[in-house]
Amino acid sequence: MRTVSLKVVSRIALAAVCFAVSLGSAAAQSLRSFESNGRSVRVDEFRAHGGGRGPAVMILHGASGLGDGTLLYPLARDLADRGINAYVVRYFDGLAAPAPNVRPAATNNRQPTARQANTRQTSARAAPAQRPARTNFASPGLHASRDRVLTDALSFIRRQPHVDGNRIGLFGLSLGGFHTLDIASRDRSILAAVSFVGAMPGNNPEDRSLAAMPPTLLLHGTNDRIVPFQRVQRLYTAMQQAGAPVQMTTFRGAGHSFRGSDLVRAHDQAATFLEAALLGRGVTTVATRPY
Image (cartoon, rainbow, N blue to C red; front, side, top):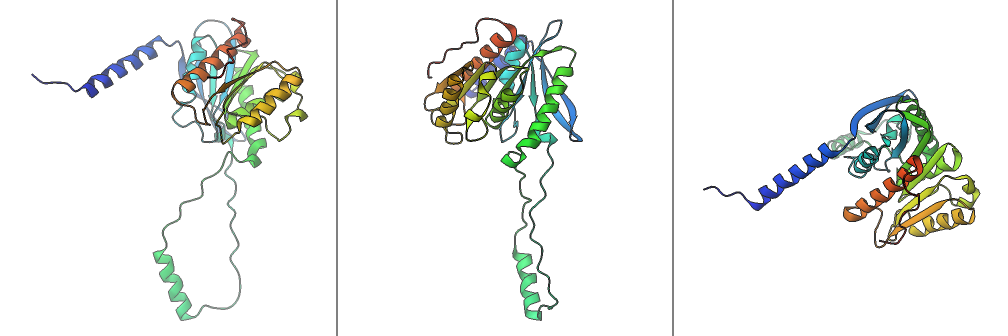
């Protein structure tokens, strides 16, 4: 009789659970696109089942891009299961690669000696091939360009026949959180905003019209070394003093990259908050105790 290893059984069981979860989800995922700056920008649409026009949430990835979607797709599916259309925007698609900073070659009329020419040829053969520099689409200098793409993204989302353009929320991860808060501070049509390990652009949040911001949820780890926790605390205090409807949930010991139970809790709080704000189910107050 052949024996089956415990590892194989575990993999089969895990696959079965994942398949069951996918069957239980009401979200229908499809890849869409829109034009911005003459470029095609991809959007993962998670459409909620049901008739009529419903609310929508624009979801923004961080500085590393979407990757395999692990950090955002579960939230998008959860929102769609709750009756909210979700759009994960790959906004880097709309950016042009900055021109490389190449130093011009020195020009003179002197010809190299035979020894110099031979040395240069030998060095060229020995030098390893250089990789092209990676484009930093997350550069602060491209903030305005990214913002134009996101403005087009919101217009695209609002044009969808199954979306109620008057009920739009935002969720942003890291760099996406910066853009989420920036847009929410300027666009009075946004009904709710969630920043996950992000912050308000600029050094002085007090300079913003914070009092007019929509209900906002800040999710942050106390050990974040990329976006310091103190920076978000300062924003939270400034919004409170301005009378803005803001909440903050801190995750003790968490850094900038969430995994495991912390990520699950953060997604659940975000989805619950957005559901209350956009569908009026429950209250927009979530449990704000530190995890």
